[in-house]
Image (cartoon, rainbow, N blue to C red):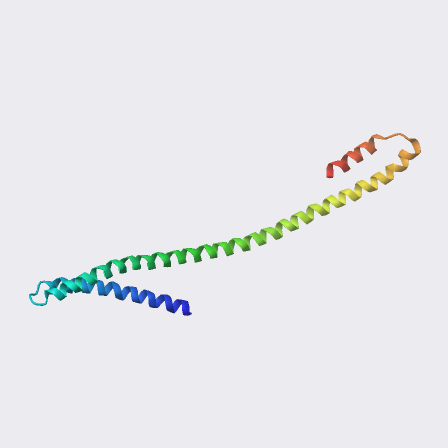
Length: 143
Protein backbone atom coordinates (compact mmCIF):
# COMPACT_ATOMS: atom_id res chain seq x y z
CA UNK A 1 0.00 0.00 0.00
CA UNK A 2 2.73 2.43 0.98
CA UNK A 3 4.80 1.49 -2.06
CA UNK A 4 1.81 2.10 -4.35
CA UNK A 5 1.20 5.48 -2.67
CA UNK A 6 4.87 6.41 -3.05
CA UNK A 7 4.87 5.40 -6.72
CA UNK A 8 1.71 7.37 -7.42
CA UNK A 9 3.17 10.50 -5.77
CA UNK A 10 6.33 10.15 -7.83
CA UNK A 11 4.31 9.91 -11.02
CA UNK A 12 2.25 12.97 -10.01
CA UNK A 13 5.42 14.93 -9.34
CA UNK A 14 6.88 13.93 -12.70
CA UNK A 15 3.66 14.93 -14.47
CA UNK A 16 3.63 18.27 -12.63
CA UNK A 17 7.27 18.98 -13.57
CA UNK A 18 6.49 18.13 -17.21
CA UNK A 19 3.52 20.50 -17.25
CA UNK A 20 5.55 23.20 -15.48
CA UNK A 21 8.31 22.79 -18.08
CA UNK A 22 5.89 23.12 -20.98
CA UNK A 23 4.02 26.08 -19.48
CA UNK A 24 7.23 27.80 -18.35
CA UNK A 25 8.83 27.42 -21.78
CA UNK A 26 5.72 28.72 -23.53
CA UNK A 27 5.12 31.74 -21.28
CA UNK A 28 8.84 32.41 -20.94
CA UNK A 29 9.07 32.74 -24.71
CA UNK A 30 6.12 35.13 -24.79
CA UNK A 31 7.28 37.24 -21.83
CA UNK A 32 10.84 37.42 -23.22
CA UNK A 33 9.49 39.47 -26.14
CA UNK A 34 7.85 42.11 -23.90
CA UNK A 35 10.14 45.07 -23.26
CA UNK A 36 10.93 45.80 -19.64
CA UNK A 37 10.18 42.33 -18.26
CA UNK A 38 11.87 40.37 -21.02
CA UNK A 39 14.76 39.45 -18.74
CA UNK A 40 12.36 37.61 -16.41
CA UNK A 41 10.92 35.67 -19.33
CA UNK A 42 14.41 34.62 -20.37
CA UNK A 43 15.13 33.42 -16.82
CA UNK A 44 11.86 31.46 -16.66
CA UNK A 45 12.54 29.93 -20.07
CA UNK A 46 16.10 29.03 -19.05
CA UNK A 47 14.81 27.20 -15.96
CA UNK A 48 11.79 25.62 -17.68
CA UNK A 49 13.70 24.04 -20.59
CA UNK A 50 15.91 21.74 -18.43
CA UNK A 51 12.86 20.89 -16.29
CA UNK A 52 11.00 19.88 -19.44
CA UNK A 53 13.89 17.71 -20.68
CA UNK A 54 14.31 16.01 -17.29
CA UNK A 55 10.56 15.42 -17.02
CA UNK A 56 10.44 13.84 -20.49
CA UNK A 57 13.16 11.37 -19.48
CA UNK A 58 11.39 10.69 -16.17
CA UNK A 59 8.09 10.03 -18.00
CA UNK A 60 9.88 7.55 -20.24
CA UNK A 61 11.39 5.83 -17.21
CA UNK A 62 8.01 5.58 -15.46
CA UNK A 63 6.37 4.16 -18.57
CA UNK A 64 9.16 1.63 -19.11
CA UNK A 65 9.23 0.53 -15.48
CA UNK A 66 5.47 -0.04 -15.36
CA UNK A 67 5.56 -2.00 -18.61
CA UNK A 68 8.39 -4.19 -17.24
CA UNK A 69 6.43 -4.78 -14.04
CA UNK A 70 3.40 -5.85 -16.08
CA UNK A 71 5.57 -8.20 -18.16
CA UNK A 72 7.04 -9.70 -14.98
CA UNK A 73 3.53 -10.32 -13.62
CA UNK A 74 2.53 -12.07 -16.85
CA UNK A 75 5.57 -14.34 -16.68
CA UNK A 76 4.93 -15.07 -12.98
CA UNK A 77 1.44 -16.25 -13.91
CA UNK A 78 2.88 -18.44 -16.67
CA UNK A 79 5.37 -19.93 -14.20
CA UNK A 80 2.58 -20.73 -11.74
CA UNK A 81 0.64 -22.50 -14.49
CA UNK A 82 3.74 -24.43 -15.54
CA UNK A 83 4.40 -25.47 -11.93
CA UNK A 84 0.87 -26.85 -11.61
CA UNK A 85 1.24 -28.74 -14.87
CA UNK A 86 4.60 -30.14 -13.81
CA UNK A 87 3.13 -31.34 -10.50
CA UNK A 88 0.32 -33.12 -12.36
CA UNK A 89 2.82 -34.65 -14.78
CA UNK A 90 5.06 -35.77 -11.91
CA UNK A 91 2.10 -37.53 -10.28
CA UNK A 92 1.30 -39.32 -13.54
CA UNK A 93 4.93 -40.32 -14.04
CA UNK A 94 5.12 -41.57 -10.45
CA UNK A 95 2.07 -43.73 -10.99
CA UNK A 96 3.45 -45.10 -14.26
CA UNK A 97 6.79 -45.87 -12.61
CA UNK A 98 5.06 -47.61 -9.70
CA UNK A 99 3.00 -49.71 -12.12
CA UNK A 100 6.12 -50.69 -14.04
CA UNK A 101 7.96 -51.58 -10.83
CA UNK A 102 5.02 -53.72 -9.71
CA UNK A 103 4.95 -55.62 -13.00
CA UNK A 104 8.72 -56.19 -12.82
CA UNK A 105 8.41 -57.45 -9.23
CA UNK A 106 5.61 -59.82 -10.24
CA UNK A 107 7.70 -61.19 -13.11
CA UNK A 108 10.65 -61.67 -10.78
CA UNK A 109 8.48 -63.60 -8.32
CA UNK A 110 7.17 -65.83 -11.10
CA UNK A 111 10.70 -66.51 -12.38
CA UNK A 112 12.00 -67.22 -8.88
CA UNK A 113 9.21 -69.76 -8.38
CA UNK A 114 10.10 -71.42 -11.70
CA UNK A 115 13.75 -71.56 -10.62
CA UNK A 116 12.74 -73.31 -7.38
CA UNK A 117 10.70 -75.86 -9.33
CA UNK A 118 13.49 -76.58 -11.79
CA UNK A 119 16.09 -76.65 -9.00
CA UNK A 120 14.84 -80.05 -7.90
CA UNK A 121 15.26 -81.44 -11.43
CA UNK A 122 18.77 -80.02 -11.77
CA UNK A 123 19.94 -81.36 -8.42
CA UNK A 124 18.46 -84.81 -9.10
CA UNK A 125 20.06 -85.34 -12.52
CA UNK A 126 23.04 -82.95 -12.37
CA UNK A 127 22.21 -81.87 -15.90
CA UNK A 128 21.05 -78.45 -16.98
CA UNK A 129 17.81 -78.57 -18.89
CA UNK A 130 17.04 -76.01 -21.62
CA UNK A 131 14.14 -74.73 -19.49
CA UNK A 132 16.60 -73.71 -16.76
CA UNK A 133 18.76 -71.74 -19.21
CA UNK A 134 15.68 -70.00 -20.58
CA UNK A 135 14.46 -69.10 -17.09
CA UNK A 136 17.86 -67.73 -16.07
CA UNK A 137 18.10 -65.70 -19.27
CA UNK A 138 14.62 -64.26 -18.65
CA UNK A 139 15.67 -63.30 -15.10
CA UNK A 140 18.80 -61.57 -16.41
CA UNK A 141 16.81 -59.53 -18.95
CA UNK A 142 14.66 -57.93 -16.26
CA UNK A 143 17.57 -56.23 -14.54
